[in-house]
Length: 312
Ligand SMILES: NC(=O)c1ccc[n+]([C@@H]2O[C@H](COP(=O)([O-])OP(=O)(O)OC[C@H]3O[C@@H](n4cnc5c(N)ncnc54)[C@H](O)[C@@H]3O)[C@@H](O)[C@H]2O)c1
Ligand SMILES: O=C(O)CC[C@@H](O)C(=O)O
Image 1 (cartoon, rainbow, N blue to C red):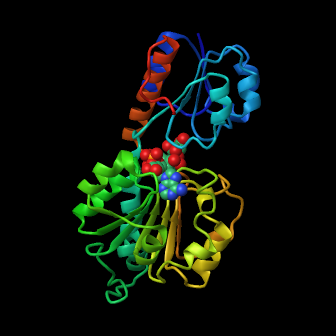
Image 2 (image 1 turned 90 degrees about the vertical axis):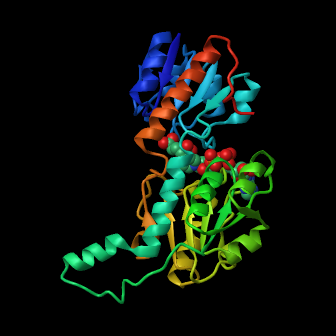
């Protein structure tokens, strides 16, 4: 068996794959001639930077499985994989807690500004009135997408005493979790207009691309914050820049951008923006879980066994 891993994988997963076959692993392979490596490959394991296109799938006649070390599948041509009869397995739920904790870090950063206050004190300041900020208790968290991440975030927000609103037109699989964690389901307009923090947890697809735009941003309160850990394409960045600059909303935390890594962006110039390099799911715990899960599921498929993590 030849197993090609084109992006960063944790040792725990690599070990499992190596027991089954010959692993070709290079974390920068996605930038190189991947199609050549795939000509005789039985499995391909990727993160989010490898573009798994129809052409690439067609150039891999022996391919039996594609493993995604993560959750978002927007970098894989799922229709082409399905047509070629190649199952795609992914790390469902493996990084959900990490992302939920990242959103808390962002909300608490906006609420308390500890880093800014530290710089202020180190610079000789002691302005206690200026740093009198706000509690999360009693504030409203608006979830756009109430799946694995959204419900784990709700669980944590419930413990903080936040009110939780959720918008998700495809709710059934997560209905019980929503009820348990106090999510009141509502329409998009209600969630956007009532939330103090709007957090995005939807996949990127034709229905969600540019979901946050001039019109939807105008529904948000001027005191509200937007947090995007989903995909850059869910937010129209030009519209967001204008909304932030004009004070239509108070701030934004963006872990994901339309172009990653970004070229110079006007967003860099704004003080009310937190920018991180797509790290919400990047914790040791989540990555060990992700690597183990995906490696195990890839091995199952290669052995002809059923997998519970196949994309439907
Ligand atoms: N920044 C990161 O490191 C990171 C890590 C993990 C996941 N993600 C992103 O977060 C997304 C969500 O992850 P998840 O594990 O919660 O996925 P999930 O599939 O469990 O949940 C997604 C939810 O979005 C809902 N949804 C789909 N289309 C919608 C729409 N048009 N409007 C509202 N809701 C809609 C679905 O019904 C589902 O409940 C992933 O697709 C991925 O792109 C980012
Ligand atoms: O592949 C990655 O590192 C990004 C992970 C994250 O965005 C996901 O969709 O799970």
